[in-house]
Length: 109
Image (cartoon, rainbow, N blue to C red; front, side, top):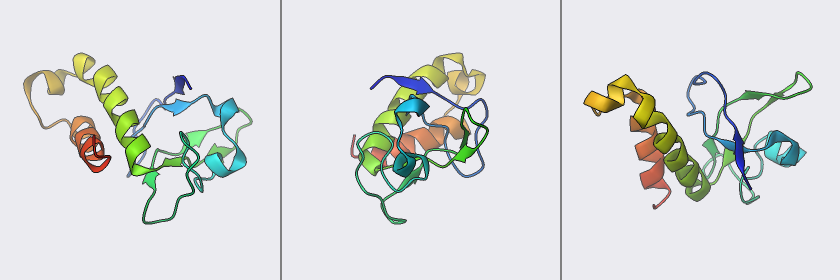
């Protein structure tokens, strides 16, 4: 699946992980009961918040992922983010990069 959606701002408490196209997500994916990438059933203990999003119809969705898929998405996000981030260019203190690296490690990558 192509990664096509990213929010414009970092939601509170969640890294804005790139998601499959919103039109490809089922209701279970949109409410976070299944991994947005691989459809694995999720629990509060196994889920990683991918950031609240606005849907095309004006509603809000709350996608989540399993640790492995969130780690892969965080890696993709970091590849896009770091080259354009002035903080990442000179320091390892960028909050987005720190969270992305943590998710990559937790995903076993």
